[in-house]
Length: 363
Image (cartoon, rainbow, N blue to C red; front, side, top):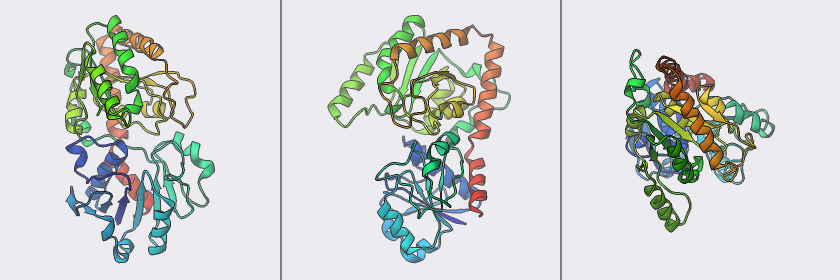
């Protein structure tokens, strides 16, 4: 089996997320590709990276290197995240190799995420996402659900008998992920939480980009740096993020984005954080009953609703959840976190997902 993953949006190789911050859509390709290689497949990445090579056993090619012989050598071509009608039809004209679309956004969009009949199928990452898009999937295209997974460094954070609570240092709440996942609400939420829990510290792992205006981005980062009890640490590698989340107590996600699967939440679960988020889109299915989820309006709306969340309401919800969590006996908290960690490591494992991909593709 020789699989090709194409991405028109970014430049990276299979090693990239181990050394620098990378978006979830691209990181997913990297982890899955390496897992597929371990499972005996050949994998080639084709994206905006301008140098050919190999990383973690995954071959890297430039788009210009895709001659007809190379295209026809693939068992399947998977277009990741975004695609254009022109690209898909160009590929279809040049090769009989089956084309698949790996959907990460909530719904089909024009012009970059179209439900084109040239695809053999559309791979979704949650039932919520598949249900939302099912009416637009052209027949007879297939539409399997294979969830995303957690970065490999999160798999080895805790030994089977290791006490999770013993790894936690001073009470620390973490925000990790892209700015759309609730970053803009934090300047109001953090002081409100510290007013009720003054010993609570905060760490933010994010690039601080909230718009296209660099002055706006700089002003927002400066606003964060002025908040008492907050460490703004920027975007870091997955290995560093895993180590830091292991010692954190809480993961906060005042999220108004229509998540199809939240990798940041899944990784926080694997790191033994008590997670507090919103009941938005596929967040409940990712959390699988382990997180405290605040009900929100328009929970299943596939569009981003940046103004739909009251920071005051989320602050009150998170304050109460932290108070209740701290009041629970240590034995109960440990039992909850151990079940959560084991679930995340078992169900959000890229090795498991690689086997699912191979089985589905019939390879």
